[in-house]
Length: 412
Image (cartoon, rainbow, N blue to C red; front, top):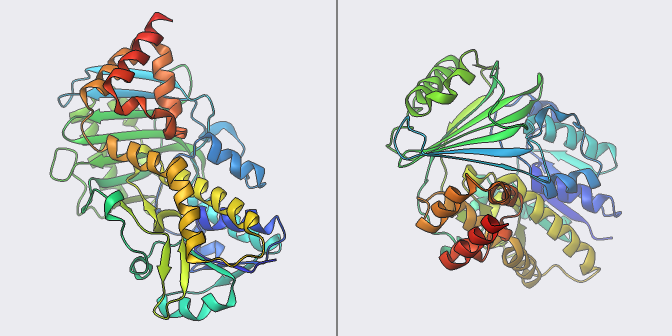
């Protein structure tokens, strides 16, 4: 069996590690934190795991939180062409539901479980110099931790990376006391698009300590009306600022936040990053090749909720590729071909859909959403496709094909 080393204990690294361990591969995960440190860390990300990615976890026996509290069964979108004015509402069902789970609970439990199942966990900081020393110990070394010292190893793919600066300033928080969404007959992901200003999302969420709660994510176009969260230092101030935003931009949902509060000082974040696609082969100073995975090679803005899903799907593809590769050497060509297969079948659509949402919707997409506000089947398709963005193509990029879909669903 090939000896595999993985830098990073997040979605891509741990899912890959469990998949290979289940097939008898010796796998070592290098984590910069213990399970306890991960559990007690500050919130670093929030996201919703859609159906197929969630199923991959279930198949590996990693769904330790099966309760219904964190599920969403559909979506509810408000489009606002001016602050405080809702022009359009679209609802739709997510047929293959997933969940939103506190990643601190998830990764801490997974890391401990990986060791319990016989995997090797090494807790240490790894920089480029340490990676140089560790890589020769393994037949294949994968880098899944997107820290700055590793980014220099992986070349930016300019042809697949249209952005050179952050497209949104982000604010996320886990809150208690938020009222349920009553506009849909099912638990739903709530989206509000404030044209020219940014977006706001809320979702049912499973907190690491308190169980079923809600999570909020706000994506502000830099310098515009939603961009109010710089310089905040306390959870109380962050929550007050979020309530002010809702009052000004979407007063019809303001009441949901009336009694809401961030659960603790470690459960909110602000930040920004530049969406980037990188080449999958990293070169160490010695010339030895390592393979990038997850956010290291595909870092997307969270506007479409694709980050965790992309990492899961990448891990699944790489797991299958390693198993199929047998005892052949893991060459740079193999690394390139493996990533290109993922990019061709899924990655380009994940990135394309995310980048599309970062721009004002083109007229034919607005036409589709307008029709979806009246034709339930179109709304179902829109929200269900978040879990499988490749289903949007080719029609979403072609006004004539979009019109044909509208006409077909309307007639039906």
